[in-house]
Length: 297
Image (cartoon, rainbow, N blue to C red; front, side):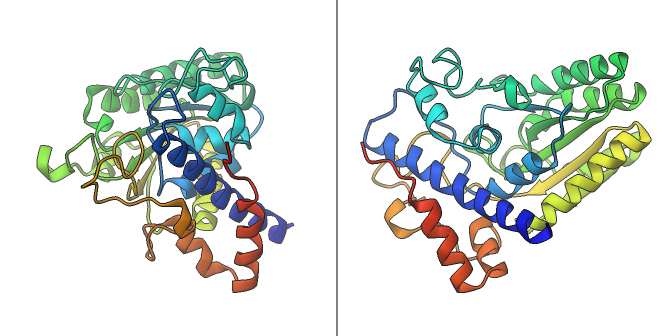
């Protein structure tokens, strides 16, 4: 069973990387009606969240939601069609990219408004609490959105009302066109959580197996202790803010499908980290299987 789970997690990381390549190459060719906030480098966390979720759990996302929607949907075509505003899309062409949700798979709300999704997640968790539903609401945010007052207020509300909310901060040091040090002082999320007695854990290394095990444990803690928890993940975004990469002649971020699934040979690339866990034969077999799905229109 453990081996089957590991195989599934590995395959999902490669799938989400491959499907993002399909979207990126399609944008380069002008084959999509909308620009997409890609999430190359976020695959391990998306797969870990997906593997953690159980029947009554809910997921609340941000504008950069592609990796999570792909993980929850388990297929790329309905999402690709949604980006083209097609009736065959995941939301029948009504939601597009930055607000794409999938209630049938637990993605109940996605917001393009900075910081808006955290109080919504608290409201959803309060509803679960009143109904006695044994689920966790996971809400995604970033190092930019957590600068908003809604982050502190939502942590405070969740702790005060004993709501089972998992706050996941994707700290990719990338907010539109500025880094953290270019726009503000350093914020210690750990110390902020200590002040509110909210359990906090920091993740780094982009190891999908480590992330999946940790999130499963922290989900159990949230339910057992009736408390919000906070997970801060150190990530690196391997694409530009939005649109195809490269998007212009001087774009330093070269994402080329023809060069394979690995974009960086270091810990910042979840696919490279995954490769280190597998034998060359295992990785080659998985990669071949995943690459059989490609955009050819």
